[in-house]
Image 1 (cartoon, rainbow, N blue to C red):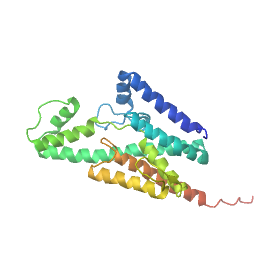
Image 2 (cartoon, helix red, strand yellow; image 1 turned 90 degrees about the horizontal axis):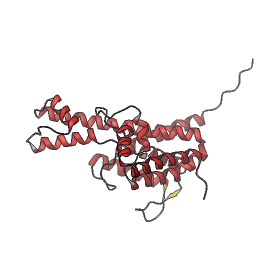
Image 3 (cartoon, one colour; image 1 turned 60 degrees about the vertical axis):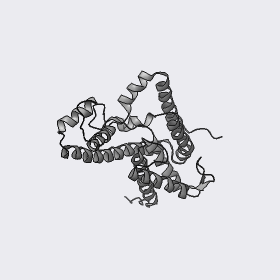
Image 4 (cartoon, one colour; image 1 turned 135 degrees about the vertical axis):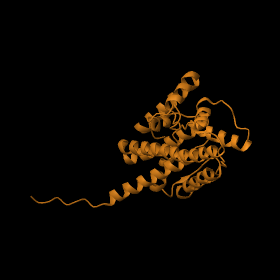
Length: 252
């Protein structure tokens, strides 16, 4: 088996160490999530650094296993083809872009839900108090209460994980090796990357639009799509630059 490339090895170590530390020290895990997960900007836990730090925290064993397995499988190949510098730039741009895109989607949903609550008779001050404290006089109308719970879910549920960056790596691998055969646990036969990766993205889009997910609840589908979109744009940009002819030196 080929050895892991240096940048991928470093990313694996940091992610795994932080995850194990959270398992062994539950209080430390709570502090890590408060400090490092990507919170909704209106939440008091929010910090600008979280668009990067959320990439190093994971929700559970399955979450970190699949992300780190994909990082090892695809990241090692890409780092060897690109070099450490370009690989790290690509990885972090995809991860940061994924976090910003998911936050933008959350902001749009939050604004719509907030407007519905105001139209139902709640004041902005009362809504802010309910969100900040998690308690208070609840509306009696079940429909309004459901909207409030949905709003609170956005406010109080931070995003964490490297999935956005991983989806960028998947797209990059698919662009460079479209005919490579890939196998997933729920796919019985290997499928070419040029078919499998777009299929995964379509599943994420379906889940993001409908709310129905084959892979479980509390998944940031638009972060996946955002990381993939940033990765695709970077691949187009780098491809165009590589095709641009070099300028001939001018004679003095």
